[in-house]
Amino acid sequence: MISTILTLVRKEITGFRKDRTAVMLTFLVPIVLIYIFGNVFGVNRSSSGPSGIPLAIVAPEGSPAINSVVAALAAEEAFSVRRTWTDEAGVQHPFTEERVRADIHDNRLRFALVFPDDALSDTRFGLRVRLLYNPRNDIETQTVMGLLQKNIYTAAPTFLFASLRKSAENAIGVEDTAKFYDNIADAVSTAFKIDREELRSAMKEDANPFAGTGAGGGAEDFMKRIVDIQQEQLTGKEVKNAAATRMVGGWAIMFLLFSVTGSSTSLFDEKKAGIFNRLLSMPVTRAQILWSKFTFNVLMGLAQLLFLFIAGKVLFGIDVTSNLAALVLVCVCAASACTAFGMLLAAVSKSTAAASGLGTFLILTMSAVGGAWFPVSFMPEFLQTVSKLTLVYWAQEGFIAALWAGSGIVEMLPILGVLLGMTAVLNTISLVLFRRGSMFS
Image 1: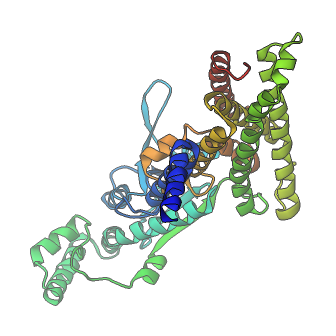
Image 2: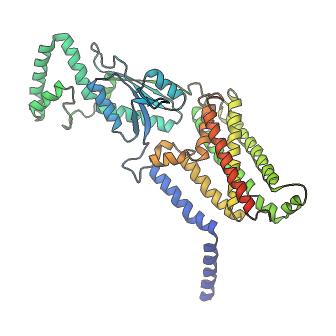
Image 3: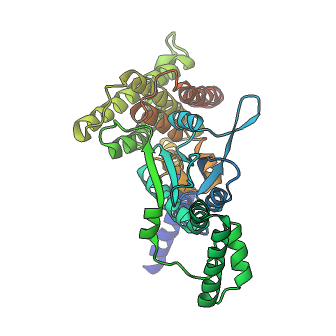
């Protein structure tokens, strides 16, 4: 009895090993998703959270205090601090407020920190700075704001002493201010056992005299009174139900991929039923069969996307009508790219099961990497680069541009061009493989 059971178990193992789809879904898919989630939540990094988020800086030159704040932000892993932009001729220019506002509106940037000329005023104690932002992803935005406050407050003693020195010099003169600082240095060096000359030198250079001493903890409320961080949202202010508007596109494109993949792989069922042989016996070519399948799936994909967005309007109040023409155009391009992806799966697979298994693996991976589940900025920078190769990423960019930013069709041409380019490439590969394969024989 035991030997019979063991023989049957070996039979099951042999069958499982031969089923590549089952092996892939059992082992490969979990490993890939675990790797992606592990990187998102900081398993392979020094800290969890975003990385490499572009942060534009508009600041006057020559201020040591402001430069110390910018240096603190540049040292933060979450940010990629930029003080210049490059024109079409390759020439770099310092960021201006007008430039960053335009870049945020066009989604070339999402965050910019503007230090006005009077950020450190001679007549006011403290720092004034303005944050311009596009909160197209709430998790990312809240994280960025928290990190900005942390780094600015950490660097606060530097510009506080700079501001204090300027105010004192205006009030009592340079010589009396120097004597006042001498007295502070004497008192602090005695109380905290700090080298008096190093402390006095730091004061002269507007550096942080308490750096490394452990002094100054629990001062966040005080810092909020001294550091005035003004916030200005530039896009999405009129969006109804911002959270749903941000999320609906990612989930819609993932469900569409599953739908059109299943529909495209129905080619295998039609082959088994002998439908292709009957069609080819008539004045119908292989290319015409494939184009009819492609057209049908694009129409079905368009209908599904529009239905999901209408459902979002009914259930969550998402505004899908104010920019309807742009939204429909994105849906057409996204449905075309998804259908081309499904056709490619059918072309490279030998059976419906193989196509479904490979499709599940690729769709889940693209959804995770492409930003359908969580912000792309929470992944390592190399995965952020990979995300731009997925149709999920570009479809979401199109939906966000139409629903969140209210972009016109002309503004969205680059996104639409990428989606149509993906469609053309995938369809070309599929046609070549279908002609060489045995799908119709």
